[in-house]
Length: 169
Image 1: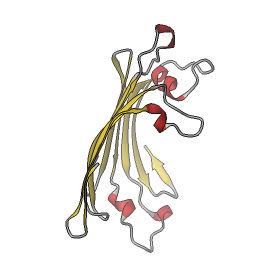
Image 2: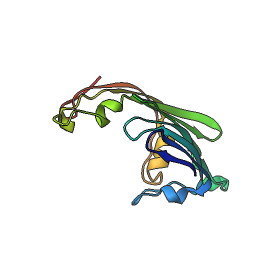
Image 3: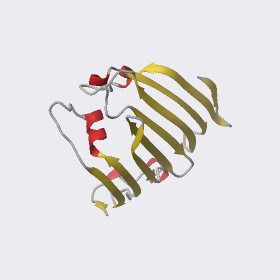
Image 4: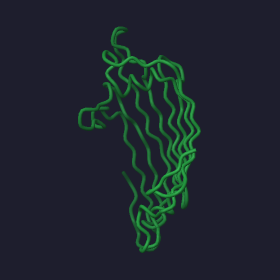
């Protein structure tokens, strides 16, 4: 990590991680198969108006053929400007691209909502575009000895209304 925070100028922080064990991302009963995580993140701006960009990559460790995972790599790119959050996930398995997910959220309206407005009243907006093969997604999230997933998914989802009464189309 390098950089710092100046009360007038704001932040200028660079974070970099190289070859971290994937087990660091484990949460409760869920964990990634053994592998390495690498990433870079640059944060500038102020606490009220941050700007960030970066990437995070996961690569599964080489295994013998019997243990080879269907999903072997995930790359995430993040861009946060003063108004919007954009996330793009690309997944690969067996040396082929198996899916991607793009998420767009106008984050500023949530972080800087008027004091009298509760989160339930806050307008909900955003889009999600996804295309993936279910077998690879299931291999990452579920025990494939128990669950058998096949097929694909294509989705274009638009979020609307409020957090209290969300709308999806």
